[in-house]
Image (cartoon, rainbow, N blue to C red):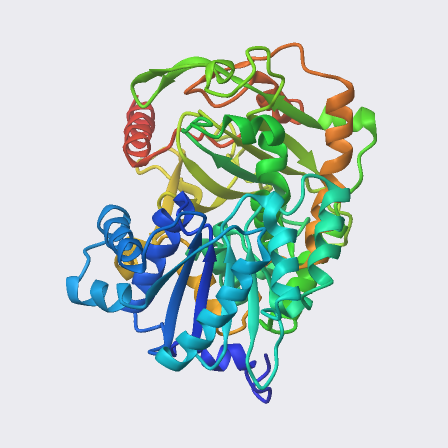
Amino acid sequence: MTSNEAPSPAESRRGLPGDPCVMVIFGAGGDLTRRKLTPALYNLESSHLLSGNFAVVGITREGISTDEYRERVRRDLSEHATGDVDPKLAEQLVARFHYLGGDYLDPKTYVRLKALLVTLDADHGTRGNALCYLATPPDLFAYIVGHLGTSGLASEEEGRWRRVVIEKPFGTDLETAKALNRDIRRVLTESQIYRIDHYLGKETVQNIMVFRFANGIFEPIWNRRYIDHVQITVAETVGVEMRGRYYEQAGALKDMVPNHIFQLLSFTAMEPPISFEARAVRDEKAKVLHGVQPMSPEEILRRTVRGQYGNGVVDGREVAAYRSEPRVAPDSDTETFVGMKLFIDNWRWAEVPFYLRTGKRLAQRVTEIVIQFKKPPFVPFRGTAVQQIAADQLVLNIQPDEGISLRFQAKVPGPMVRMGQVDMEFGYARHFGSHPSTGYETLLYDCMIADATLFQRDDMVEAGWNIVDPILEVWNAVPSRAFPNYAAGSSGPKDADDLMTRDGRQWRSIDHDSGGRHRRDKDEARALRA
């Protein structure tokens, strides 16, 4: 945005309480609501970002009273709040919760919801605005949106707004994603649709744009001339837990790549937008996905990796193989690990490989983006004790410890010319103080002020599946015969390491928690003194 350009309506609202509205949660009894949405609403309330004219309607199939529902909300806050709970503030929020029992497929549920919204508008002054959050199984999305349309609950009239938040997955392949987009667009305009990805609520993800475009020292070198390659890692220590039935249908590729991984990819590789207005940012993100180089079946077999965890040890305890998990077939071919090498066909990134990996039951829980720069010429150091020069790395840590680190070369003290790698680190919690967050606060607030910047657009969803579909086709045609091919608690299958070593590169170790980092630094110092 230039100095003469007015801020967008949403940007001018930022920092002020959200619009008056009712938040309608379909699936109010599920884990997402209990563990994430309710604590997020409390955090917004404590930050004075909820309107004084705000209410919640929780919808489930159970037949309980509003008083019983409120008691559940109190319990959820006590168990899942991200910080200390102020009893007075909690009661102030709980008093705004209301309950409606009903079947999501029954038109009568929506008739009663419409009547309840009229009552809550009179009681809470919500101005007829409603934010519907679909925290339900994905096969209900189109049906719920359809009923919202036929009941008139999606209609924006007399100055009121109606918005719908849809959780992932957005389809199971390109065809179903297009069908879902068609179904919901029959009822809603694109401006009413908020396809949510909680990863984008992380401060470091949002900070990628600020880091790149507000610092003159980084943007000039953010290109193929200076960057050797990019690594994006989303590693989890948990298994599939009780989600075996879902995971058998999805697998790591469908579950993580078209949404979380590609969102991180697009923020990392996007061109500078003309402003931070939602359309400008999403236009540039979509261009990244459209620019991903298509792969032939032979290239897919060479440039993608799949894995499935076997028995192993995670966090000091023995864990079972994927095939022994509840609701998983004993001979399952479902992948729990995905690795791949992609290229983006544009001027900035031509011939720069992007290595992506995600997996369950790995050594550490970590999400990070690694920018590895090209090595400088060795020429000046001939005739010295320096044997080689390591590449500089910029690491954007998304979770669990949000921050940024830069690793570069420095001279080891002493008369000899010797080098060691040093780290400059910035941590959000250390620098700005801890800020209770579930990752949903920013996203819910953005829905209330009509800022769609961090939400996926229909063309972005379809572009992501357009990349993934050919991989699925090849993998289905050529099933893996090696599963399980990595131990729980490891860094993944050997094929993932080979994906990089064939190119003369290697993954940044995922086993680098703060304790591990300190041990590594001590080991390096000891080696240099030897």
